[in-house]
Amino acid sequence: MTIHVCLAGATGWAGSALSRGIAQSNDIELVAAVSRTHAGRILGDVLTEPRLTCSVYATAEEALAQSCDVFFEYTKPESAKANIIAALQHGAHVVVGTSGLSDADYAEIATIAEQQQRGVLAVGNFALTVVLLQKFAEIAARYIPQWEIIDYASDAKKDSPSGTVRELAFRLSRIRESEMTVPLDQTQGVVETRGARMTGSQVHSIRLPGYTISAEIIFGMDDQKLTIRHDAGSSAQPYVDGALLAIRNAHTFIGLRRGLDSVLDLTRVQR
Image 1 (cartoon, helix red, strand yellow):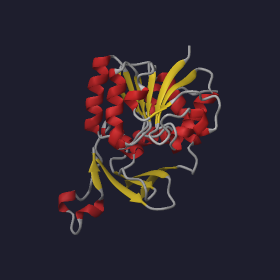
Image 2 (cartoon, one colour; image 1 turned 135 degrees about the horizontal axis):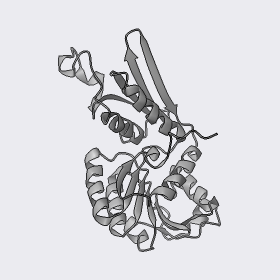
Image 3 (cartoon, helix red, strand yellow; image 1 turned 45 degrees about the vertical axis):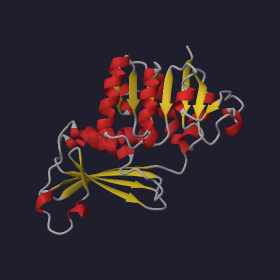
Image 4 (cartoon, helix red, strand yellow; image 1 turned 90 degrees about the vertical axis):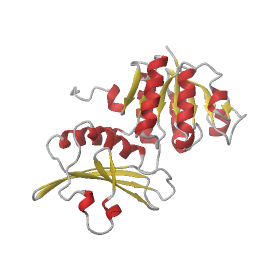
């Protein structure tokens, strides 16, 4: 059975790589694409990929006139929430690859997904190394009560922290809040230098040229520490396989799930 997909952000850095990945798949087909810059064109002409024959639309509302099974949101935070809600109201399952949505946004989206009896899979980062970082960090947080998260990205990235780190902090909050030897309100000096408190974790965001996306979590105990870190390269290719997995699994549940591992079995050892 072919899964019909509408992809918002189809000509962007990550979206174009995913579009080409879909073109190479046997069970997924792009039926509509969203890109304001290239509206009115055929996606394959834009990306020089003749297997992509769908039209490009200026808005998600226009693209959703084409019936789809899954709507993939890969645009910007300021338009993502409205796009997701529109897709749910059109009867599509949704995969969210856009960062910058808050926990309150996701709470509202979860309610609508339940009402529409559709699934929303929100993934801060589709790379396998990030999925493993999140799982390893959850294990460590069960045994080590103190940690801080450092979020690295390019100077051009507007949202802070990244979706990868938002998702990490949220997941850790379901285990426990990190402990602080000196509470923030007892900090001497400029308290903002201690980072922002997000769902029970201290988060520090760095925005500088030379970075793509990196996430680091440091756990500390007396006379020892554990550092877990993910570094992205310059290509969007590492995200494609995870995004395809998300598309294939978006219909398998109702409501909201966060993290790619929520639809994967990472406990089974493959030989």
